[in-house]
Length: 126
Image 1: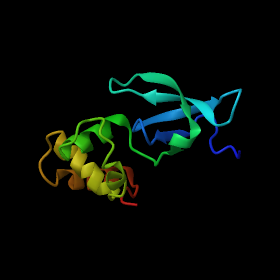
Image 2: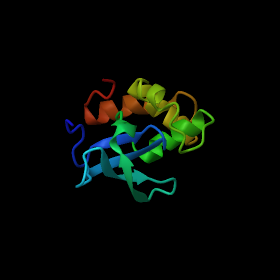
Image 3: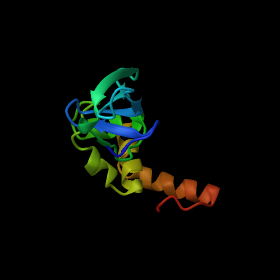
Image 4: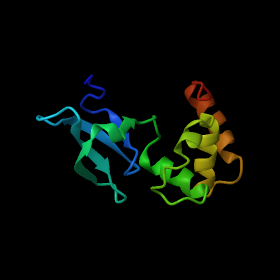
């Protein structure tokens, strides 16, 4: 079997519907492995799982941002069902929605981006 993952890779378990970090293959077989899964309370829980249920995880924003964007869509904080759609959003839209969730006025996130770009002389809308 070709080793698909290496230590530290972010993975998604298709059956458990949980994200985690790959630790390593089992010593007795490369068909099983250990993964540190993220729990609802932000802790890590190590589980021994079948490699066939794992897939490389898409890049996601940190827990605070993802939970805010999920809640803004009416989802539970740990519901990953729309993560792919969230990750396909333009970064300035993500920033604006995060700002709105945290009580800033509609569209103020875009104004903040412009101020940050002007002060720090960097382009954040890449």
